[in-house]
Length: 622
Image 1 (cartoon, helix red, strand yellow):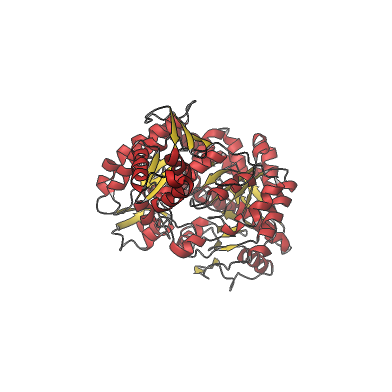
Image 2 (cartoon, rainbow, N blue to C red):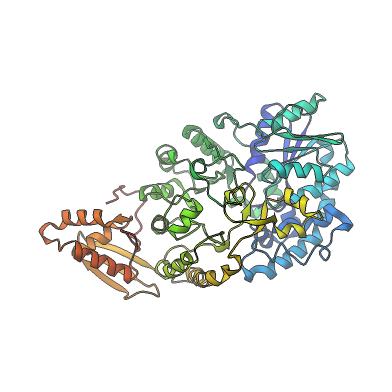
């Protein structure tokens, strides 16, 4: 039987294992195929001895790609001939304050790339393996190609295979065409196609007829479509043994906080309804399928016990909402997770946010993207300003840390939306700020690119960063690229209307990171008495006591409420003491003026955060 080595190259993060390779190893073993996973990203992390800079580059899309360029392309590749750091002077690294550190880090890593590749070739038992597969996601492509070329030069009979996000559809076809040392490229999911291709090869046959694998035979390339989708519950549990061995050997400082990466679903149920305009994560197929709650809980509990960790990262594009009634109550009752990271839409209700915290969620990616309903509609997010702000408020109440960005730079966007956001920020500086204010990336398979003509985009070409990485013609780069540059009307005016929001966001982030960050909290002293504590710079006063119907209405607006429903509830509570709709409306609008509430059309939302609840307390949301 052929022996397989799966490889994770720089610049994949060292902080968590590859869910794809761990799953694929288990699938190969299930078919009787010996397999190991080489975490050479962990080895390079140790080899370079620049851990913080490594992880900084790992978090930046495409920036680390240039490090192994000379190893891959040799004498025809040089920093001077391919441009002065175009990949760095680009929207891929929007924060000017960190550019010098990244430049210095890239120079240091580039000097180490050749010695590292030779070390891998000489000291790793590569001769034992017949098929060597590389996962290529975002910033792993060049490093993977560089080592693959060296392996093929020394052992021409070995099969070199590639899979991952950089290999989908035309990108994979270009990969085979431009790099003749690559034998197989897997398009889409490789769970079924990769083991089948290896079995065919073991029998002396090419992977002819195996959907999902494009392969080289002679001077020809056979393209066989996308790989089939397996039943999620039929997949074996992933195998993370190699990751934890790599940490033990090369990066033991990470062992105490190392998570496992699990995939409970694939595709995007929201994308089935209305794919976000900027998203290309699921290629051209966003069909959603999920493991059952019973299988998901069993997998989480067994694997966290096996690897002695209470930390889990879910790699799902979006959370299965059914889990709020099935999986999460069971996880909360079990209480075995120290940290659970996941991604979901922000339009959750208060009870759902509470349940996430009870289940072990600490950090959470809610996909907020904007604080303006007009822009959220443009992006097809299916959320509103009020939903996003109320989520941020509840996240603070329950001790969740949301990681989110504000996006800008869409063709045809309304500059007024960014003025509205700049005006909003002083009201919400007590809530968790975005990680960045970032220009939207134009990515393959996204509606922005797929519907480019309707959206007014023209002169679409591979992102300029690719020119500092690959010595190819523009036509070839266009096929290899996942990220694109393009032109559209009004593009030259973007900075002029973004700058005020950028200034506000930077101040928000700086204030949040300081001791004694701003607070806006409320406490209910009685049914119709609420005390406000406010330390925001925009405050009218540090303390304020609300009484009567305004206290009732303010407390009721912990979730966004229409004026009609507020009026009805307040009348029920105050009875003959109710002062009337006109008085209530004046009071609410005064709260808006004093930045204690926000209003959108006829809906109101209180901005003060309630006291953090004991997570063991009764789930009474009144």
